[in-house]
Amino acid sequence: MDFLSQAHELLASHPVVDGHNDLPWALRERVRYDLDRLDIAHDQRGQLHTDIPRLRSGRVGAQFWSVYVRAGMAGDDAVSATLEQIDGVRQLLERYPADLAVALTADDMEKARGEGRIASLMGAEGGHSINNSLATLRALYALGVRYMTLTHNDNVAWADSATDEEVVGGLSAFGREVVREMNRIGMLVDLSHVAASTMHDALATSVAPVVFSHSSARAICDHPRNVPDDVLALLPANGGVAMATFVPKFVLPAAVVWTRAADENMQAHGLHHLDTTPTAMKIHQEFEAANPRPVATVATVADHLDHMREVAGIDHIGIGGDFDGTAFTPEGLDDVAGYPNLIAELLGRGWSGSDLAKLTWENAVRTLRAAEDVSRGLSAERGPSNATIEQLDG
Image (cartoon, rainbow, N blue to C red; front, side):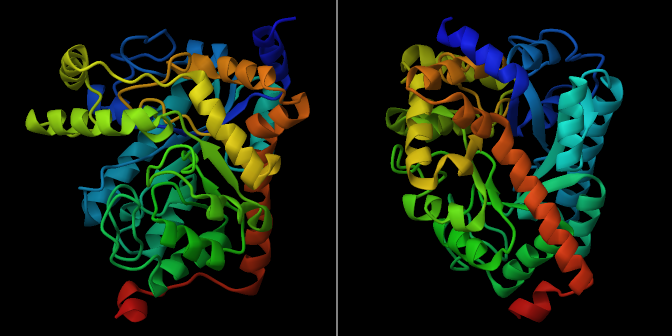
């Protein structure tokens, strides 16, 4: 049996839990959630990285759908847009119940796997989505959000981002209270996008496992969005999981400089550098034709996973592709159908079936279950925090 056939066999029983997919934002930007105009029941190749046929081909068993809104949205505008994103995911789940199952807990994930459906969870990407309000944080949890990335590309008032100038020095007092309240309610603390100082402060504060929903290894590709080795080494004590992403500029050193130039070209055309609408992609493609793009491959991503396993251990790694949140993807991981190619590559490198089962399914499910266990204990000890940023940070 060849490695690809072995990969499909393994994934049939231990499908992929993917930590981050931006399909909701793509649907918002392209068709304002009009699922008649962009029906993911059908192959949307050329339009999206994600649809149900390719999720099935890729052996995805659980997906954290990102309810991301741009960091340029502030205050109540960010909260409203996040609510619209949540509603967009709910529309998806209502429209495709035979394929997508609502999942709020680790048990829900296992139940969906047993039913042959794709467990669908939500993650909010950026603390700007709560507008400095712990009550809003709790409301997002009540609506089904199961992780929150503390920042996106810009700082928030209480936490520093990896891609902004450091101001807070990690987490402020209110930022630490956000982490404690996330622990109490059972929402996973997501440390993708945050500064290394914020990673350390969050790990020192959290009594529940944390996640990196879509970050790779900084030792392999020196980009601030990736996880340094000293942080990876803290995951065994915390119990959390770092989910390797596929975004070329985060995994391939040669792509970092190229992508910076491509982003500047987008901005020169008056477009956001994360825009993946057809108009934006045409500009990207024209730039790429004149400036050949360094191409990441399945092997590039596997190099990160090899390193992350070595530093953090097999129990603390996972996968978070960031499909439909990036203009470019690695060769062989072109869309959500590509996961078996990655598993085949790892099999060829000597990864065992039990190791791969942890990578694809078991680690992520265990981490969410552990956060639920911590929440039950903390909720029995204390009630909701009503602290404000003014009270704690002055």
